[in-house]
Amino acid sequence: MKKHLAFALSFAFCMAGTLTQACAQSTAPGWDKLVADAKKEGKVVIIAPSDPQVREAIPAAFKARYGITVEYLGGRSSDMAARLRTERASGIYTIDVALSGTLTMASIFYGEKMLDPLRPALIDPDVTDGSKWKAGKLWFIDPEDKYILRIFNTRTPMFYLNTDYVKPQEIQTAQDLLNPKFKGKIIVSDPTLPGIGSSDSARFYIQYGEDFVKKLYLDQQTIFSRDRRQIGDGIARGAYPIAMGAEDEEMIKLQKEGFPIHRGYSLKGMSDVVSPSEGHVGIFNNAPHPNAARLFANWVASKEGLEIYAKNRGTSPTRADIDESYLDPEMIAKPGVEYFDSYNWEFVMNTKEKIRLRIKEMLGK
Image (cartoon, rainbow, N blue to C red; front, side):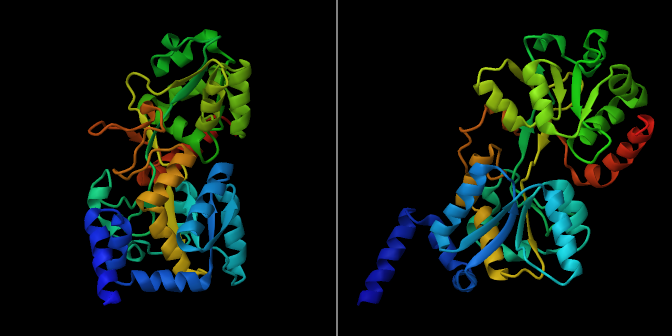
């Protein structure tokens, strides 16, 4: 009698929508076993952004949901990649999941065959239901459509201004950057290195050619920085009132603190930009906690997990059922608009690198 009553109450809650996600999970083949096996492992080790708020929020929420500890390794993806290479060369496997940017995920984790297929590991109906996603389906970026899931897609500024020195109306097109009065006043992320700086320079190269690139980076005596914090400091002090490649989170913080920072999203004649930030999920092969890894991947792609990650990271999720009122509306990509995806697979893996090497040669680096 008690069993029948418990079933009836559970069914009633599911029908009422009170426990929609939990009910859907309970009907997914293999879900209960996955949770049980993950709890036996007791821990999952992840690579993720170094943001203090993300470092705090994700482990706490996952532990509250499943009672499983998250060992959070925050830092630069490239540094973590170097660690993984060293460990794996010695037959040591210590990391389960990566929440990472495109370049490291694609060229190293995927390129060096460190990943297990993620698609078959996603079994939560809340995740696999295409209607939950803005694209109408899960967005895998790799050529095989199964290893690397993209969960962020944020419209990002193309440039930043200190408006005490340069007004927004003075920078309306890319050609405006070549105005002689801005000579020595521009700072950018180093275009000769892999990363956001080479993405920006490759766009200019593709659209406006070598002559434009030479004028912008050489004739304008543009400052190259390998430290994005230095870019933020330069624009805040007004030493370099025009910047590209700054940390947008830092620029938002400076705005809130009262600094005269303008975040410019558009240049006439160029498509606006979207970026995934550290919004990719992958699971490692030979993971020390394989079940906890799969459970975590399902959770971070679920409404609960992705909402926590996106809010604390300040990015736009690729799910369609998350309230994005925490974001500046400018940061949310609009349906039907064609954007330039700064981390499109073909652009990152082929086009950008060829142009980066050519620009490096042009600049004598």
